[in-house]
Each structure stands twice: as C-alpha cells, then as structure tokens.
Image (cartoon, rainbow, N blue to C red; front, side, top):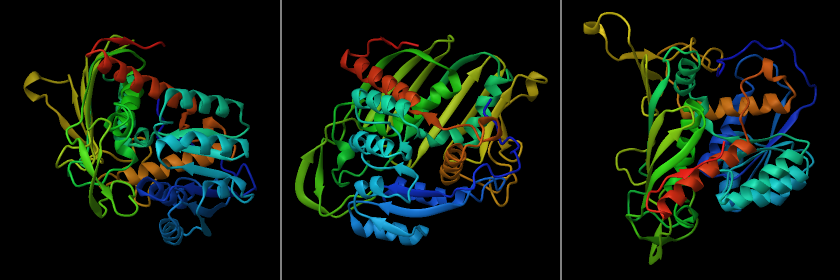
Length: 408
C-alpha cells in the first residue's frame, strides 16, 4: 500500500550535508527548485542539512531570477557546470525531453544523484540507455511522476489494494490541458517530433503511469488515435519558457505531433480502461481526473478539486446510497505532518506533490531505509515501462487503432 507516512528512526542517518541543483529554470524547474527548499520542513527532521546550490539554464536571466527567488547560492548557464561542480550532490533535470539522455548520463558518470522529469526521454532507445546507466551507477536515479504523491490518488490506490473497492472493473482517465488551445501560442520543442510525442508524451505520460499505479500491469492497448488540430504556430521572438505565452513573429512553423490523443486499455488482471488527453481543451488549465469502478463501489478524483475525492460504496439501503464527498486529511496518504496545517479542508495541490517527491528523493539519497521513509520515487526502469506504453499507443495509432500487446 502507498503509505501515508511511516514513523522515522528518530535520528539523522548522515552527518554530511547535501548540495542540490536544478537544471532547467522554466515552469517545472521552478517547482523542483521550490520543492527542495520546502522538503526538509516536511515530517520529522531526519534529513542532513540541505544546501541549495545552483539553478542552471541556458537563458541566464531565467537562471538568475530562479536562484534569487528560491534562495540558491548561485546560477549557471550550462548543465556541464553542474556536472563538474564538486559542491553539488543531487540534481533535478527539468529540460526538453530530447536533452535528458546526455545530461543524465553525464551526471551519473560524475557521481551525482539524479531526479529526472517525466517522460524519461524522447525515444525508447535513449530510455533503455538511461536505465542501463542508472543500473550501473553508484548513485540514486529516479523519475518524477509527481501525481502519485497526490493524497487522493494514493488513497484510491489504498482502497484498491486493501480490497475495500473489490475487483476493479474499469478505469477512466482524462488529462485535459489548454496551454496550446490558443493558435497564437508560439512554436517550441513541445510541438516537434513524431506523433505521440505531443500531448501523449507531455500529459499522457502522467496518465499512462497512473493507470498502472492504480490498476496494475497493462497487457495491451488499442484504439490509439491522434489529432493535430492546429497545424501551424507562429515562431517566437526570443525565448519560450514553459507553457507561458511569449511574443511571436509573423513567420509560422509546422506542428509535427499530437494536440489530442486517446486509447483503450486491457489490464493483465482483467479490467479495462480508457484514456483521453489534450493540450487544446479550452477551460481546463490542468484537468487531470481519474475514475475507478469496481465490484464494491467506485472512487473518483480530479486535480481541479485536489483536496477531496468522491467515494461510492455498496453499503446500506439502496435508497440511501450515493457518492459522498471525502475531504482529504490526516487519515489519508502524505497529509499528516506534511504541511504546517495538516487538517482536512485546508487545501493542497500539485505544488505540495513536488515537495513530497523531493523529500522522498532526499531521504533515499541520505540513506534512510525504505521501511522508515516515504515510498520511493519511480525508478528509471519504471520510466522505460512508461515509454513502452506510450510507444504501444503510437503503434496502435499507426495501425489504425489495432490492438498492441505489451510484455509483462
């Protein structure tokens, strides 16, 4: 089960401090930078001292601003500087997917601990190579599937694994975002690459991971379908950072990958599922939602209302049954001790998920035993598995929606 928080050993396991850096100062990079600043304040004080050393970005104004904002000692303009820095032990890699492999392999070879943003890379070949590098490294390498830290998602997983919901019948997942709904959003690396490297890789990688997190191994996918509904976008004037708008020119470039993707799932355990993702869903800035239907009832959760879940159980007279709102609180994963005010109804969201993710990573780096720690972050092998799923969806789409088996 996904533990809420197990008791610590009560003492610090290392007297050595940990120097932290973040490569990439865009939207998600800021989330990682802030998370490391917060991580040592969560739960019991069992971590060694955390030094916030550097934020690196090729666009120096962004790196400098991030370092000042989040209290890092300095900023750098190249990832190589982070690799070579003797005062840095832990590094988050939060840059374009096609850059992950070179940076991560260099960091691991230099003896750094690495937390890489999802998806692991831009190709299966690179993902396998990165997993091999992680396997042979003496340091910790993990992938940031942040949503597994959402108390609502972890609570639903507990309901499944404890048998409370009973056998799962089917799971529906949707991740609707609108960061690309405006045709005037500038072209960037997010819009380049083969079909399946767009909305599917960006937000669908989260959802593909979460379907297995809840439902267990997927045995096949089918009905893969992609659509690019905005075929051209203006070229930017200057730097594009994250999902934000930037000044654009009158010159246009071709969008190569998917604005929308959908596919169906067959789980090895017999359940079915359906997934739908979009980056052009107007009115949904960050609309991740999950629904689980099972023999004893159902449970749903949405990022748009992240501090609650809906639960239906087949209990009591039929005339009194129905979904009930459950406000997430100390009885649910990650809440107790994880916030200054850790009670139901206060509210929390994705930012807190990044902080818990960073805390779990630092606990592992510090050598705190898994039994006395937060659940570990996903391994690079799990990152490869996620990309195998995404590639199977792309193959299904290439074959007109045909079923594609996935080895387990």
